[in-house]
Image 1: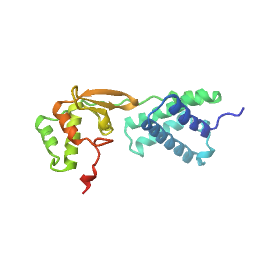
Image 2: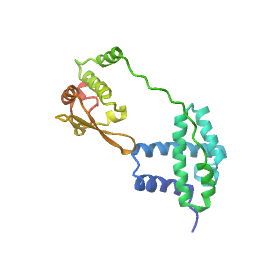
Image 3: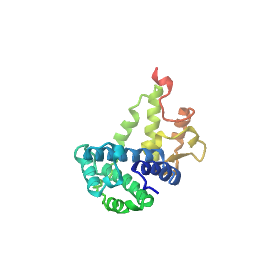
Image 4: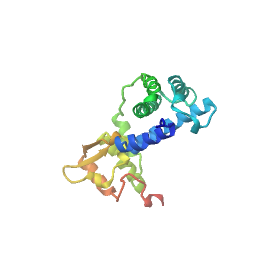
Length: 221
């Protein structure tokens, strides 16, 4: 039985490991695909060969480290982005180790690459006047202004991430007591958050079918 090819390992990683086994979200699959596409292109350019001619042996620890350094130096990626790319690469090489015993040594060397430490800053909050100015900025005489005001108020009152808020559908809202909204976060995590009565009234007036915080056709006129 022949050893798995790089192309075969990449295909089984995305189709079997990420999608079928881990039930990864589309956002995770897309992020991992971007990271590995960049890595394959980097290795191919470095080796002076086409991506189709590469093998797992071409992706040794030093090559991956050079790729990560290139992300920071040339692409101006921050440490968090660099670490996110490394997470995707590690996940793939865990799959390589499980699928191709002959490549375990290469996989182990890649898996030994450490993440970089990041410096965290204390989040700052808006003052009451700044917050009021922000919420009053949209023109609520227009459909788009009412949508923008509702979105800002939703973010302020619920603490939702922007990605969570814009994914909310009308079906995710309970606008009668107890007022609640269902948020879907990273990794398919879900949580219920309470809604203030005044926010519920604003959302009820805004509700259309499907996604909630979208540009309504009337706002484009």
